[in-house]
Length: 248
Image (tube, rainbow, N blue to C red):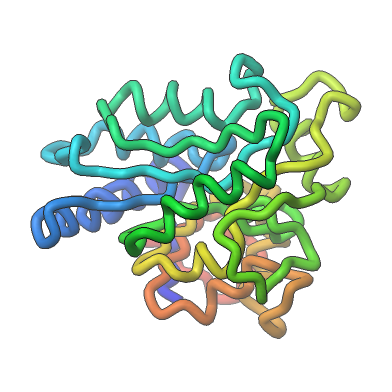
């Protein structure tokens, strides 16, 4: 794993966006298209804002999938990841080929529908984060490292739900959904490149757990250490518990 640490979350977002843009441009140049996976959440604000400002990306040749979506939450809700991506990525870039998860009344059927689409061709780059509980997408501990299904329905643990409440997406714990559709660990790991964007001090313990100790379903993001082309982008705060961390 390539570890890169920056002074603050703004510079982290800008540097990660520059790398992401290079990967997308290269894929479009070499293959005529790029297939990407987009993450959501407060940790991705600066990154996505910077990515949408990057020049000379032919977004009409980009296909986008996303990592996860709550079950039972309408797109009109402020916490909807479909809404998040429309507002922060799709509308700003003009992407026309995107596949948003809509759990509706049959989340399992939606897993099958979008899963069939994502399996048609390899993913060039996945943008991911790490949850406060070490989750990757909505794969909370203990995560399923074995399933080959591209998308699965998962139960969200209390720490995960508390994170969503703490980030201000919901007014009370009762409003936070208890289930979601999540891209599976195996599907994420099939991406040719993975850019993991993790700012802020509240992620420091999860970052330390991800980089130390065994690769374990109890720390789902630790699996990233086994991927041959992953870059972990941290800021000074999220890297605070790492020994000998060097800020770039």
